[in-house]
Length: 284
Image (cartoon, rainbow, N blue to C red; front, side, top):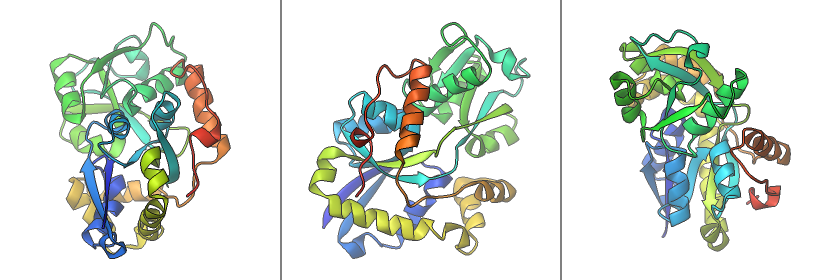
């Protein structure tokens, strides 16, 4: 049996992985798939791919493209979630900030440099015509718990994270969401370390087939909305709204999208160079 280590955020997007693992579907194919939660998100998973702590990751598109260009020895093998990620822009519930304009030049909490929360702060700033050199300041807070602490204590002023995962924190009166900022591309992809992919391409292919068989009919699973609400402590109506907005994919990233992401990151001065499509994406 081949052991494969895969990482992802402990969020509703990844429930399909939990279900296929619970059903023993990889074991039936002689694959011992070991899931590891990464609450720190994309930056933490990129590092784990580099060090070989994991073989695969379900990871934010812009984050892994940036890290591959900067030397992460991995390839994207498939889109996982086709639709954009809707990032909420959050402040402490009792803060004086009422609009995006109030946050210009203020301290943005990010999980780590190179993370999705870091990159999306730039996209949000550009969307509102801010000066990317002077209007962005960052405080590293590691994860969602760190953000709650930082905003509550006044160590940071605002925080961007997926709006449905932060909704319970908004509902409980800890955060206030003042705006949304969707990604301009598919949000999650599956990436694999080159060394592992070269030696186990057929194993990767089987894993993709198993997960795709679940995601293709994911919304048709009986009581899937209740299952998500219970597991991730979300309100049922929020889950139903999220399901209506979310589409999974069984295809790979196309060349135009990879180019668009790189050009955007170059424009934001987050990337220093671009790499060809074949260095970033591989069909399996």
